[in-house]
Length: 275
Ligand code: NAD
Image (cartoon, rainbow, N blue to C red):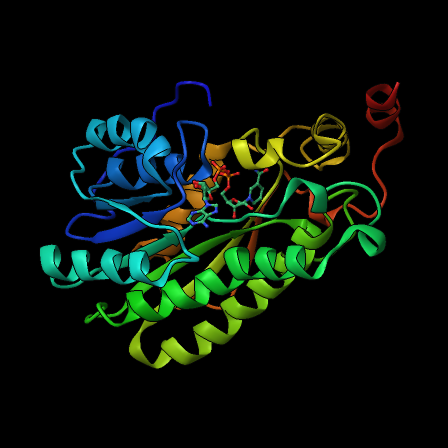
C-alpha cells in the first residue's frame, strides 16, 4: 500500500477492539487498523504463528498497541487464550475485525468441480467462514455495551470468478453467517456487517491463480475504471465500526470501484486491458 494519511478524528475514541488478520503492511486488516487508530481506537491484534510476529509487532507498536496474541483459528486453545487475554486486560471490547481466509493453493486453480477435495472444502470453510462464527460468539461475550463487527468478503461469493473456486463458496457461507450472527446479536445492540472488497495486492490475493488478469480486468471493467484502494475499505470499516454505522447490520457492503454494479463493461478500456 502506498503511504497514505488516514483521516484523523475522534470517531473511535474510547473504543477498544480486536483485529484478526494482519500478516504484513499490505494486509487489508492493517489499513483498517491504521484508520481506526487515526480515529482514536485502542487495538489488540492476533497473529498467526511466530513467523508473522516479526512483521506484525513493529506495525502494532507504530500505533501504540501492545496487545498481541498468537492465534490460529483452527486451534480452540489459542482462540480461548485470545479472548481470555482481552477479558483480562480490558474487561470488555467494543469491536471485532475478522480478516481471515485460507484455501490450499491446489484448490484455487483450474476446474472447481474437478479440483475441490473434501479436505480442501472443509478447511476453506472452517478457516474462512466458521472462524467468524466462533470469533463473533467469543467477542460478543465480552461486548457489554453493544458493539460492532466486520468481516471481509469478495464478489466471488455471488458470481463465478476463475480460480477463486472453493473460496467463493466459503465467502458465500461467510456472508450468510454475517446475516445470521447479525440477527442473533442485534437485540444486544451488536451490529455485524461484511465488506466486499475488490481485488487488492496482498499475500492472500497472491495465492489465487490468474491474479494479474484479475487486477487488469477489474480496473478496466469497474465503474470507476480503477483498482480498489485499501483506504476505501478502511473508511467503510470505520463507518461500520463507529457510531456512524448506527442501525446498519446484516449488510454486505461493496467497496470495489462499482465493479459489482456493472452488467456489461465499456468496450474501449476492456479491449485495451485484454490486449
Ligand atoms: P492477508 O494475507 O494479508 O491476510 C489474510 C490473513 O488470514 C493473514 O493474516 C493470515 O495470517 C490469516 N489466516 C489465514 N489462516 C489463518 C488461521 N488458520 N488462523 C489465523 N489466521 C489465519 O490478505 P488480505 O487480502 O488482507 O485478506 C484479509 C481478508 O480480506 C480475507 O478474508 C480475504 O479473503 C479478504 N479479501 C481480500 C481481497 C483481496 O483482493 N486481497 C478482496 C476481498 C476480500
